[in-house]
Length: 250
Image 1: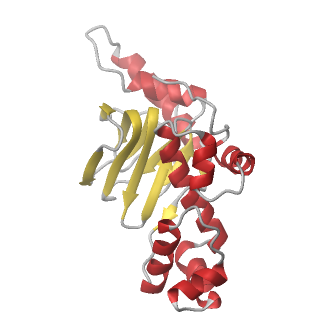
Image 2: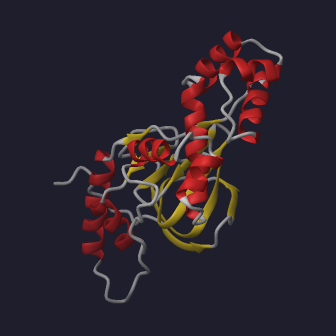
């Protein structure tokens, strides 16, 4: 017997969203897995931002106030789960891998119901979906929100000059701080180094630009990579495909 045997029906949604559209901050009593079968979806909470192209999904735990933003024409799928069903065991948002099987399960399960639907078959699809979610590796794709005013200012400088090669020493001078202080704040608040955070910031912006069909070379330049080839290497290592590679659309 599946460990997810249940007698409840989960809430689902499918939305077609134009690029740059926003679903304002809201909260659910249930967990939710959101997935964009076309376009890119970003989720923002008070703790940070998570972004997912079409081979990634975003897990949003029950009770987390969040906002959605679409980049590129986006088809958003959502699968809700009761608060006592948490296949990932997570209490914070996370980006998870969506392989071809999980993708098709999400699309099939969130399809509009018809009179011919078999409730038992639908329940079996959900059980397999949950099994696949429980095995989906988490992805280190997040952009935490800075709290300390010194770190807020530092992040603002970098984002405003995304294409500029600002190293930590230069950034400290811009902020009237010390590189040691900024390095400590990045470790404490972001749980990553400055360079790691800057890479995450660049990738967030890159994914958004690519969704708007901006050429790869232009994206690499605007986001601060020295060359398109170096950008492609980092992007492929992070997302599992090249920035020019088209993910399947639904």
